[in-house]
Length: 302
Image (cartoon, rainbow, N blue to C red; front, side):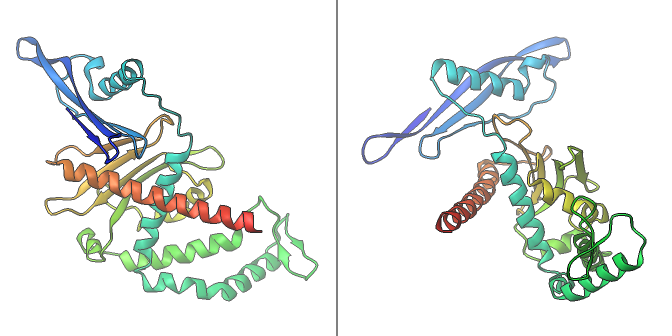
């Protein structure tokens, strides 16, 4: 379809359109049709984008969009010698970082939440009194005379802090309409997450639907620590504000070979919406890489 070169005459981007024969269910049996699959290779970013529109009434499993994209990916390797590598946990780490940033962006608008850090002394005092008074089996006394729990039983202080966070967030968002949340000026809200915790328990959290935020639900607040301990998210649903209805996006990193981005059915979306989905992912991917690079420099300096 199109190729682009830089000022040196080097190929920097190429776009190819595949026309795939498919069959769909008709009133009198199968009907022949065509599915168009655009492919873009960006040599600067070293990424390959394969796009497809999910269609209804597909007659055969191999003609569904996800299977056609896998076929095209295979053809790109055979015919065009495109080599892809496994991203391992990279995509999942980016999704975790994105969700964490978006959630704490929302929490930062809650005045009482921002005051919790100032309650450190009170929390430590409360934890100490409970450990001293409660006849727990594994409580020990440190050299400084403090009652402590060994690692692995429970991070009691962290759990108490989490309860206070739940209190602040639940209080602020109690009986508040979802549309009011957009008035906070948020870039996006997290609607659903799916992750494996350190105990290898697969957890999926969502609101009433994929456009309702989960950060103000009691269930999410009670499991937030488990998500943060894992440091990875397998699937992330977010909702972005747009002029004509919300843009609901699903980022799926369950397959380590690639990242799948799905725009929710039922809305008319265009190239700008697809670009918005790519841009928000690339934004947090870049921020995470910069953060990792910064930590590496500090470690080297030490």
